[in-house]
Amino acid sequence: MKIISMIPARYSASRFPGKLMQNLAGKSVILRTYEATVATGLFSEVYVVTDSEIIFDEIVNNGGKAIMSKKEHESGSDRIAEAVAEVDCDIVVNVQGDEPFTERESLHKVLDVFKDDTKKEIDLASLMVEIKDWEEIKNPNTVKVIVDQNNFALYFSRSPIPYPRDKEAGARYFKHKGIYAFRKEALLDFAVLPMQFIEATEKIECIRYLEFGKKIKMVETEVQGVEIDTPEDLDRAKRLWK
View (cartoon, rainbow, N blue to C red):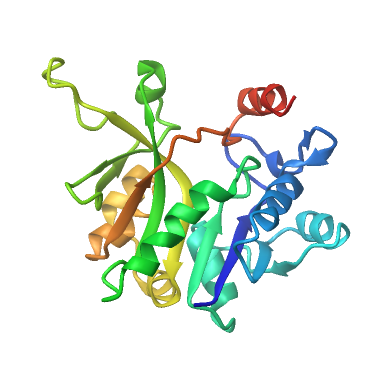
């Protein structure tokens, strides 16, 4: 089974433009993420897929591999689907460009899902981490996920799910971490499936898979890390790096 990683990377970001080129302990965020992904040793190839010459040059000039893509993609999955179409592989792992704390243990758990899936029933796998701070649970920048008894995703939302109408029920809340492992066929399917109104409303791309009946296996991890969506996140990442 040939496994590669692709890191979608846009220069412009609505909440924090240019965040991937911000300095994190002497290197850019995107270079930190690329190097962390390579360091896991889990992939035959790792590429940054970008519409930005700045990011492309940053990776290539530091000895990495990058692919230029079109600018008009709606999502990171669309961006890597374009890039992976002509690449020989079985599994594609999408690591978000703002995840400089990407590490081997969590990625290994996600990839193990496919080794056990002999009937190829799982279209993609992803990570979730338990969150207990109510401010984070309420935060719309934190995407939450709920799962069934077998840890297949039921729904993703920027709202608190499940809603705690009965606070004594002991609900657990999980944050969706932006790492996906796709079967190549599922990723190529994604690129031709039209966006539906729920995905368009929540602005969460993996909802498209659920709307079209795809199966997403969620894997719990305890590794929090920091996803850099805001300048405040970058400050937290700098403190954590030290």
